[in-house]
Each structure stands twice: as C-alpha cells, then as structure tokens.
Length: 172
Image (cartoon, rainbow, N blue to C red; front, top):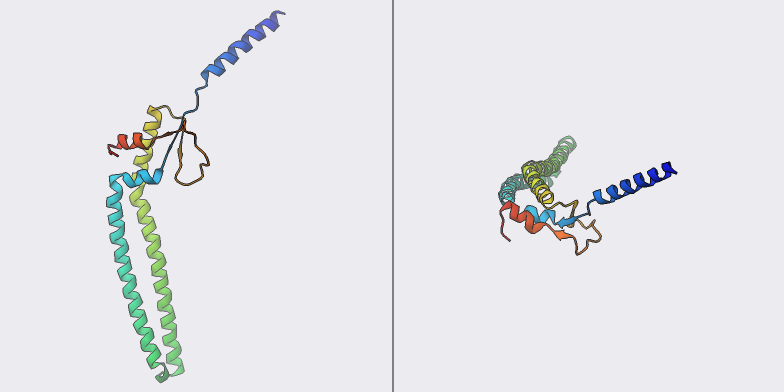
C-alpha cells in the first residue's frame, strides 16, 4: 500500500512538472526574399552583378557576330573550296560554335557562383538578425511563407518582418 501511494505521489509530481515545464509554441512567419530585397547591401551587390553580366553579354555578342561573319563568308565562298578545305572550314565553324556555347555556360555558372559569393555575407547577416529577433521574443519556430510550402498559418502567427526590419534599422 505504501509503495502504491509513493508511486502515486511520484507520478503526480512528474506529471505536474512535465506539464508546467513545457512552454507554449510561439510561431512567427516572414518573407525571406522580401527581407533580402530591403537590405541595403543587396542593391550594391545587384549593381556589381549587373556590371559583370553586361561585360559577359558584350563579349558573348562579339563572339556571335564574329562567328556569324565567318559563317556568312563560308556560305558565299564554299563553292570555291576543295572538299578538304571545305570540310576543314566546316569543322572550324562547328568548333567555334561549341566554344561559344561553352562560353555561355561558363559565364552563367560564373555569375551564379559570384552571386552566391557576394550574397553569402548578406544571408549570414539576415539569419543572425532573424535569430536575434526570435530569441528576444521567445519564438519556437519562424516560418518562411515566401516559397509556398507553408500551407496554412494562423492569425496567431506573428509576421516578424517589421521586427526584423527594425532590428536592421530600416523603416518601413
């Protein structure tokens, strides 16, 4: 009997402390891309990327013009070439077209790499600010509603965008 009452007392205390130890979930949401766009660093990064993309586009256009000029010249003169020379020039044109295509692919990869390189400190800064705001306000979860994977969020979920912008010193 004494064991049974000790068990009930222990069970009562364990139940009481486990229930009181649980904090209620506090959920907030934000729009990550919108916050990124409002960060001042993003504008200067976009300018750098635009400049680099324009330089690559100019070079690509020059390569295309030169290649088109060579193709046009080949088309007008191909009847005067021997079979050996014609096949050689065709091979050169095909090789040049492949080099141009490779340049375009490499340029796109380089721009993506450069974008990530320049934006990484901005992502780190924003994530740090989000963590700071979430900790200060005791949020259990912060959801990003921008990508559409959050099917529903309650009216009880607070939009943290104004708090994060305030933490960054940006007025809405």
